[in-house]
Amino acid sequence: VSEATGIINNHYKVRNGNEFAYVIKTDVKEVDFQKAQMQILKSVTMTEDSKDIIIKIRTQQPFAVQFNTNKNELTVTSDDAIFNFKKKNHYTPLIKEFNFTDNKFSVILSSDEFNGYDYIYDKNELQIRIRKPFSKGLRRKVIVIDPGHGGKECGSIGPTGVPEKDINLKIALYLKPLLEEKGAIVFMTREDDNFVGLYERVDFAREKKADILLSIHNNALPDGQNPYITHGTTTYYYQPQAKNFADIMQNALLKRTEFNNLGTKNGSFVLTRPSMPISLLVEVGFMINPFEYEKLIDENFQKKCALGLKEGLENYFTKK
Image 1 (cartoon, rainbow, N blue to C red):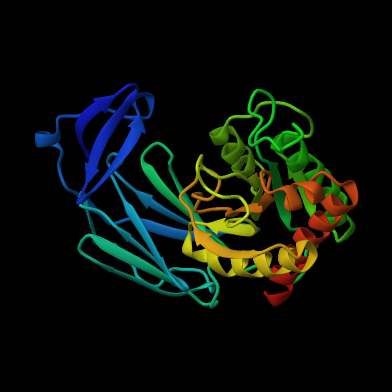
Image 2 (cartoon, one colour; image 1 turned 30 degrees about the horizontal axis):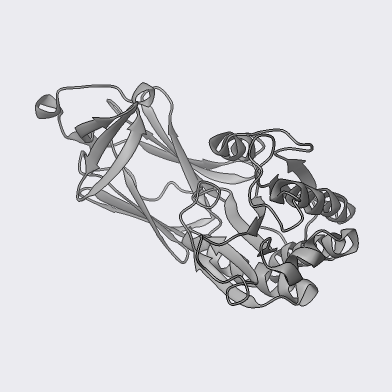
């Protein structure tokens, strides 16, 4: 249970501990905050399917939880529940430790890598999914490619009028068969000039049970900034488990573009925030820099960009 402290348009502003968030009204069940009772949770089961470790916790009613990750550990805390599970040792071999105390429990994986998590409430059950360690190589990896913008959203516009949305799509269309040749299962959020909402793109990746969500963009600058000074390639991530992937992707893409290296950056965007799948947003170059724009509109260069992205994905999974 989180306390609603205000309403903005169709969102509640809710407080969970010392943090605030905005939640769509239709996703909220209203209860009297003063009457909300602390739950004591005793039942937990752990199983796995082909892709995930699944933790199921029986509840009396949904409650607010906070997630934190550190290397191969996932910690779950709540101000509305006490974790007093009856058993500590009924977990899968992929879980090294499962510890709980008062309002917190943690899962430590047997593997050193952490590939994301997600959770839902299913009736009176909290279900947490933790992505299992990846095998090496691209074969059978599910990758969702997201060509940024589309339809009524043009993105940035180059000096001769070519919209960013077109270049993003062409790079994505060149990338798809390169990944499929390596055995990857590839989906695209759009394959033509259609508008797709940001959250629709994330939902699509989740529906496909993607391992990777890669959003392809090209950059611009606010008014008053000099495009001859700030330009180059940037890769954005948000979740800690995506940082290593961002570094690998940035290096691979730069080898093909030979643009200025603006580095990897932590960016809170709709397409980088998912905790699962592992999500990145790449800004290949700057549409308003004449040198980079001239290259970006060239089909042969677009193919080089696609090759760099393919090599980044291949390098990431090879290192797994």
